[in-house]
Image (tube, rainbow, N blue to C red; front, side, top):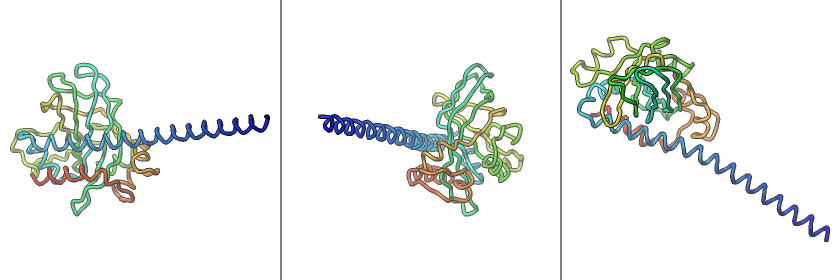
Length: 234
């Protein structure tokens, strides 16, 4: 009788342990799925901006950019003042024009000043200098402080060659409720999301290893990279 009880107890404990393992695996899967969804949404953000007639300067700047950070969703509270934040992905471009795999980032702890007080739904930061790209990779940076930032030109004929001579590190382009809005990101802080990187690549990797050294890749991001290439060709 006691042997039967002990055997039943061992079986029960084994089932509990197995259940816990499955729950843990499920959490890991959910985390990885969240990163997949962010990359997929980032792809649609790039595609949406590319097709807009008023975004010609966005496409020109992207063609000569050193990198880009895409935030599929940025939340803002308040009118011209208040907190804002969101998650996004950083990709760098090498000398041959090839886009890297994405590294995950967070933006927050600052204020985003918006024309008309609208809420930002989608935001793309076009990185124009090697200094800016390396600074974002190396450290937590403050836009408008550590790096110069400006609202991206829209519906103008300024031209990418002229724009790059303005010595601006980062240009911002934003869409809210289907319409382009001017969004100043000065005061916003960019921080690497190590947990997001680990979930997406299944190992602990830094932004440097992903964007510059290109030690890892994930084919799930091929669509996002293709969207960036298509945007440059427009």
